[in-house]
Length: 159
Image: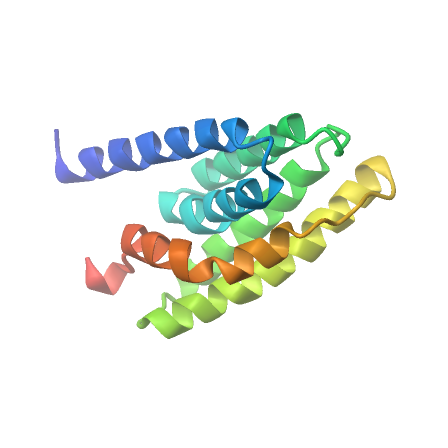
């Protein structure tokens, strides 16, 4: 197997493992939100294909809606995830970050955008809902999952 094929298999296994853990973490919405943000904003843009990026983001959205009992499972989270993951994928492809700080800045802006877009899409799909504290968990624990995403991402000029 070539190096590229082995890398794709490894990324696929990490994505599958994270999706399984996302569903298992359903009783704990805080850590589940952090893993959800890691999947959508950390793993999905790294897949190098916009179709794979979109599919992983949609799967994470559907699994989050299935796991949380307070959300109506109408697809708002999946739609918001797809929009934000594609936007971050495009942003990283046209201007890959050269340092950790610029990557973290892009991720922080993506978390803020992801929060508003997902809640807007969920409001359109199912009406008024509670926001929760998932976005705050994601921002506070960015120093934990950010380096993992940076290590998996490896910008084109660093490969």
